[in-house]
Image (cartoon, one colour):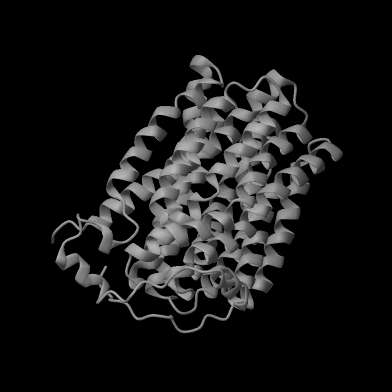
Length: 415
């Protein structure tokens, strides 16, 4: 078995995704310390969480359209450089207003990355392996989220919260260089792809130009629209848990900084397993019926979120949240795979941009709503969890409405 260049491409893609989420989720773990220094209220904390998603959601569809038109390579490189710079600037914020502005700009520059990444996968991965590729891509996000609380706990205790942002600048710049050097817009454009590997993709068909119809075509696909609605609802819960978990463990459950870092990492490791499991299930059993793992994962997540709400102590609550993180990420993998298998390759960037925009709009609303609820109820996080139970149940309906047609193209089954 020889090494295929697409493994290098995917390895860089997964590394960049892990760094992307590490940069992003550092804020969730550092914000309790930032809030103390800058005297932020719970609503102010929610505004900081939401500010990132304002820019992030706005740039999803434009980023996807540009990835379709110009190829993913320049989008991947440019967005990594941008978010690395914004990570460093976050540490310089003297107050809430500057922090909000920096987070909006951070999200605006990072938004094109997911559509460009999924465009890369659609071009570089045979269809028979797209579920696993998507699962590993999503797992990389959970790896970044897992490392973040451990990284922040170590940095804060040694150098203060600002150091956790400064330390991430150079790794981002180095990764952007590697992306530009080793990734091309398609296997046919890369001089590192052998003839044997090119055979995995079949005979290349003439490229289809990306035009204005790609976005309109995507919006006319009912399955993509239902997928986007379900993703919005499911992500409202996922982002609420990921962003507020450190605050919940430190404040509501009274964990120490070290204990918070450990248990937050445990839940995020479950998320890593969920993405990998989701990719395997999508390819092995549900390739043409992706709504089945979506609905099953939502129902299991609902049950364990309720159990976390009524758990008698912090450790019990965390172990109830472990399957929530696991199965919510099975759901996310299946939802993220749908645009890859249902949309022609020349429009995948736009299609994923539509679905991910819906998912990230929830990132704007969810932290604000949670911050408001905690303010009004004087920190009743159990009420927040009950609300998450309701949202997860509602997400089952649009998932059930997804009708997955036959694949648009027949690609080689070689992985």
